[in-house]
Length: 480
Image 1: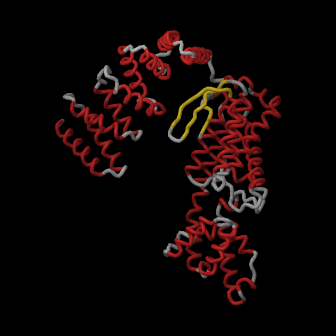
Image 2: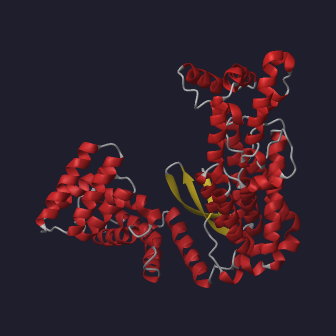
Image 3: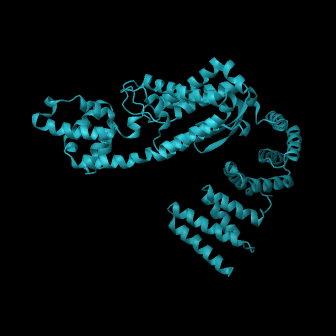
């Protein structure tokens, strides 16, 4: 489950300089430095494969895995080894710091006089090279307890998805926090909280040998700061639960314990997960704690920034919308309809208002109003990606109504393209067949058919893809 603030607008009078610089630094570190790790690991693996180490260390590695309760991994590696898939196993052996520590405790009595010299020389070469990999050299490994890594681990990431995910969260939450406490204090708080989140990770994994990398601990701290800064102000939040997503409004401080509970539950339910939930938890507590402790000195720098981006018009809109929703929740449908009608006139481009108004018109069985609102919602919704899934569901529901009006041909084609883009291919098939029966034909339908064929091909449905591609070619030739 994901919950993130979606409230703060960008105000260039208080440009998020530090947030922007942190994002740039993280991107540069990964793209210009960490990107070479893959090639380095391949080179080390090549040396390891050509050495005497695989046959000497394999059985020791399996024993180490069982002793460290990594039973599933041990069984998987044994299966692969027996099948001859040794290449995929070598990176596990050479990059496991816990195993390296185990090997470094062995001596001549373990290996035997004749083999010890050979093993030690080759092992030292591999270990020296492995320790030059960025995530091992500067990642936070609790067992080794190197002070510099409490700082450096914040700027390293496992892969592009890890990096981009973290930077999106930093951009969203950092914007509001930096505006509120000022760029200098935001930078200091970010670094300090990142270090504290690392200490929390070490506290719960003090003998851990897996390096911690990533800015997620510091970013969790930024979320904690956000909640502590905005306190009981009602903030708009975005949420996502698997494939479901949406928005809700709540006091910022109320979400802090929710974030904490989410991290604790993830931690309990996924004890072997590679995600450092303890670091996230430490960041949330550190970030909120710093703001609560130092708010008197921090917030006064840019206190007025707490309200930046919330204009009188925005506040008035929210008050009216909340009032209309309260009437709806209290089943005062007549009053709610009047309020949503007034809101729609005042804010004709607001799709949220139109959607609520549409459902109210359904309650009153006002088919004329239902048709008008449906078409307007479809037209606006295809331009707004977050609403596409909701538009799809509304479209299917609308067509199921006995008295629904025919959707205009041009709008149907636009909806078809939108549904293909969000992967609703079953609906796209039905809509395509409907459009092909219409006497009116448009060159855009050719594009839609080609797009659908490509989507079906990607999903491993070559026969259907071939069918729709043929329809596209046939239609294309009719325009020549």
